[in-house]
Length: 184
Image 1: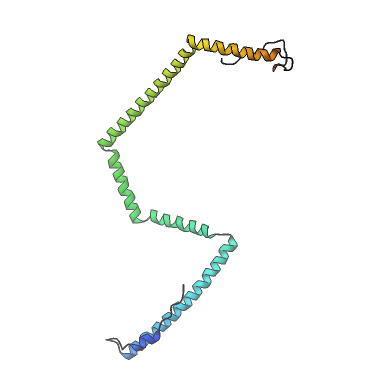
Image 2: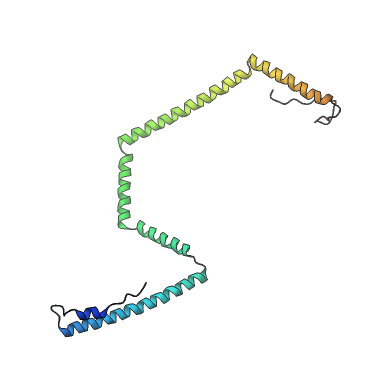
């Protein structure tokens, strides 16, 4: 805050206001000067108090962010207990109650609930069908033929490794054939 100087000469240039005597005007000017002096003193005291407050906060480790959080919390609390907020909240609660009790809301809620149940059942059926079809496919002659060919190729590749003198068997013994736990 800055001090705003008052031009006392400007008031002396004007004539005496109507209804005031010169003595009353002088008394008012004297009172005005005292009030302006008190305002200046109060500003100085306030500035000193603000500096002292800042020093205390710094010593306590309080930051500007902490003060801002505290101010926002207090302001939000003040809003929540204000008459306008309470009135608006009450109105919204009344509207919510009326809306959820309306026939249109109940019908929409029931329809969406049924749609959700039917969708869930349909997706479950689709999953069962896909699972069954994959099982049927695995048991089909074409898949069995493919599986046999892949197994033959695998045994030829793995068998050629076992017969090689440079390579060791992964199981550690060359006498036992490797276990075939592969899905093919």
